[in-house]
Length: 171
Image (cartoon, rainbow, N blue to C red; front, side, top):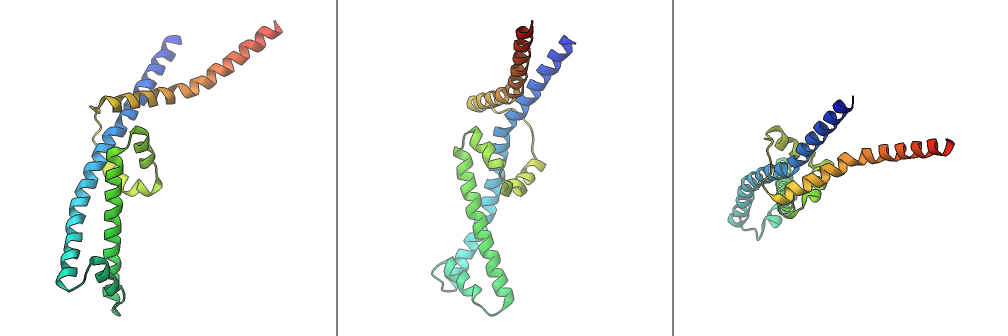
């Protein structure tokens, strides 16, 4: 029984460590996805800038404001779409800059936010598990795995200690 328990214990830690090692890998693949998105969306926004310039508007914002005030519903809907594209581009740009500078725990915090789930799901669909090469990533994953692994055992140890103390008291 003791050997089986130790084996399960070691396998559990190994699996937990491998899972925590995937956060930096996921971050890299997420950044690649964001960079592709930023490249494609940046071209569309550059097109908006050319349109504004070609039609005599001082900026894209001024052009969109004029489109929003147009009486044709199709033109207003197109202006709303342009605003949504620009907002999504700005959010992706912020995310890219943030994740490039974020540490392990900030990356985890970013990924668990519910508003990230749709984009994260797209990345996870093509996710390729691997091992990170950065020592700080491996170290952070090891510390995280140890904390998660030891947390439940701390409770078990405290309960056992209390039981032993009660048994000694009554003997």
